[in-house]
Length: 75
Image 1 (tube, rainbow, N blue to C red):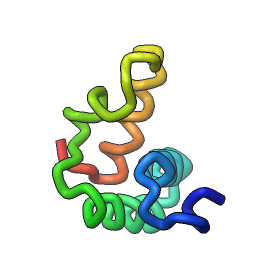
Image 2 (cartoon, rainbow, N blue to C red):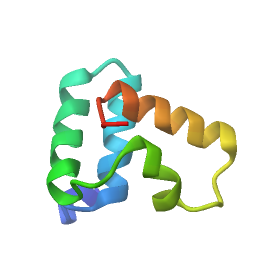
Image 3 (cartoon, helix red, strand yellow):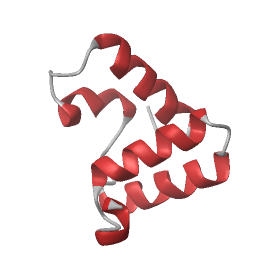
């Protein structure tokens, strides 16, 4: 819903990219990453911790990073 209201909503784009990749929908994952890269070209998997903040559990962040790697967000 958030992406329908604001297609540039970065948290929604990150979630869409990771979840689609992990659900076996690579086309949708790549589309979300492409849009995310337009909105924030500097974002990398390696800088994700700076974006999501310290309140995430390490294992959750690890799965999120894995999904974004599968969606081909640059390291």
